[in-house]
Length: 411
Image (cartoon, rainbow, N blue to C red; front, top):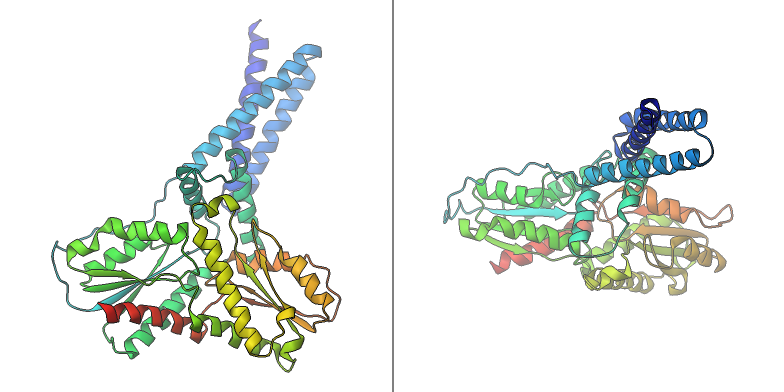
């Protein structure tokens, strides 16, 4: 093979490789950078097509296509691996408290919840991928994970930004106010997030450095799951007890009667003058694959029992049990649109729906669940009212406060 021919094959391979690399970049980078990455990917593919079209014929053309496809796949795969291997660079402060230091006697709460960046940042899902892989839990295959991240970015682009972080910071402030009024005037609440800053271990270290003697980790989740387990692992790795502090966990809120009542109050406020018996109610759970239930069955069990108890409370207060239903956002059946159409068929006048397992406004409650709801065929005149996540309803704050006080009283 002469040198010019070899150079053509090299150009095809290199350009195809670069095309695969730029495609992964396009699928995963910040929105401000995606147009450039898409342009570069398309340019590489265009040049490969031109090179093959003008310089190859017959079997050589077929071989060139094979080389281009393999090179493109190699570039895509290597870049996908690099993106998915990105480390969590969130800041964790140095623990400066001396071992055995009893602290200054004040109480602290590490407010621990899921977390979600305000604007697009895939680090939470990158951590989740690694966690599933470590536990041998099947999920999206590697080659499809950049596409999964692309879909996450699209959701952010649709809603503008997630309100999750700001809502939880507001909830944490209100929790601190209510706990101080309940007899702990020096208590401090330290917000923390599994998928945002600060991490649970960072919040715990801050509380220890500032002299907290008794620390309660308020787990603002509906269920025991891999999320609560991961946060608890971070907390335990700090080893706060060695530094003279007591540490207790509240557990999730699936069985909180106070939290159940928040759903009733929100429903009553939303339906106006409509008879509750004529209102359709849908509680949408998050859902997880059946395979994950073998690792954390409590997540599905708690989600189901939590929502059933809410429906029982609604039924006790005038809502027709026949006009209520449960659905899942992901992985499990039934999906929301099916239940919405069934409620319409029963003749309800309006439908209210909750993202029942979501603690604060998020991409799920702002975008994913409403999108699924509006897939239903609903006649004009039947309003679909989104009551969203738990958020900072007074009874939500009260439910968290009750769990914290239980732990403070036992220490």
